[in-house]
Image (tube, rainbow, N blue to C red):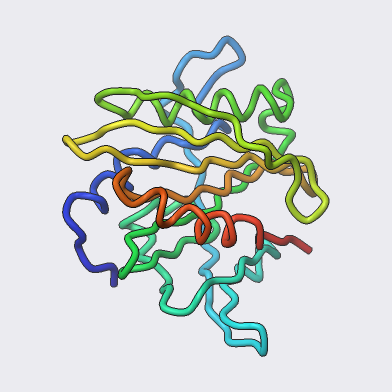
Length: 199
């Protein structure tokens, strides 16, 4: 189970519960609270010659995790997520949430990335700045990534929010950490994000 690290686990839960576009918005953009997305597949960790791999066999996705990372409790991050992990020592949190492109077919990659970030920012007490990064692809699939800063429950946080279009799905590949630790954790966050693969 995930250990408590200040209020960051609460931040993770409250910020990421509503990050699914499918079923959350009608075509007019209105909230639809009756719809939900569920995921019954359980991620698992396996050791390889190249290190730890966190995979979801049902969804056929995986990431490589540095030493010391663990599978997080889905209830602590997002029980709709396809992958979820954290580094207890570095206070880095990570998840992948995939959606069928047909369920959000009125959006393209740029539009989806904007809507996901809007949902994320709506959970902040104080929404901060957004900066697009140079990342344009992951494993050969088109992607767009933003650094999103904000504050919740008095804690400044920094998210690397990446939207990937692959296999007729949109994936949110997200890593976050306290704002005060972002500079020291950025490279590790980007390494995990860049390791995302699908079959």
